[in-house]
Image: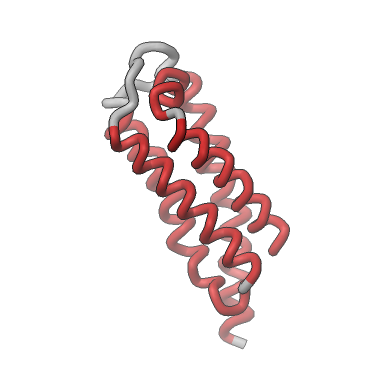
Length: 125
């Protein structure tokens, strides 16, 4: 479980750094060239992803104490898709957005949910 959380942390750290440092490139890639400028909201999304990376890494280190933080992280992963679609892309759906949605949000929900359920079971025992 800790290995998956560390992997999630490193993965989100890389994405967060990319989004934060290159917001216009991120929006341009995601919109397949339809939008060329990233707003300050994209920078905030990058900061949010970096915060989530920190949560994953710290939770991996202090799993028994901080395991409850996985539940809000799952919510943020699920909420990330609609946020990106409605706020950042103004309802523009592209193949790259679908790829981003699956690889950065939805694919993590399953292992994170399993880990959160196991943490809940262990913490109650």
